[in-house]
Image (cartoon, rainbow, N blue to C red; front, side, top):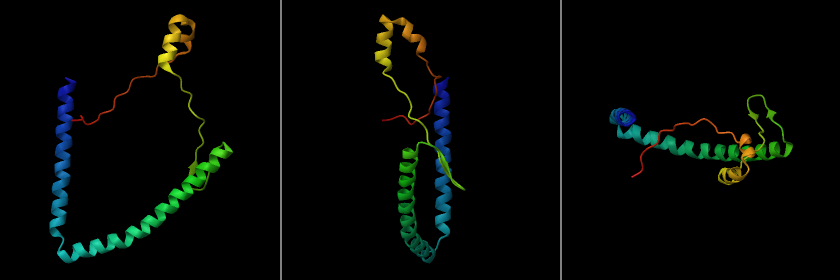
Length: 124
């Protein structure tokens, strides 16, 4: 049953992609060569501007993260906040399970999260 639903989902996804492709082809068909050139010129003009700002954003983000990590606390600005979170605890579940066979009392501290589902493309 789920196999059929997955196949139907893939079909709808393909239909959506085809619709978007047809839309873009129609949009492209109304552009004259002059308009296409003007759009290309605008893209070139703004590419450099966006690249400069993106570099500034990346540098400032790294600086903020470093300072917040050093400070160990969340910092709020007027529009953004840098949220500090303590590191997550991890354990070797395979090793813990093996140890638990000999010492079953430790397994009372083992918590299993709820399962989840993600839908991905099938690799070929």
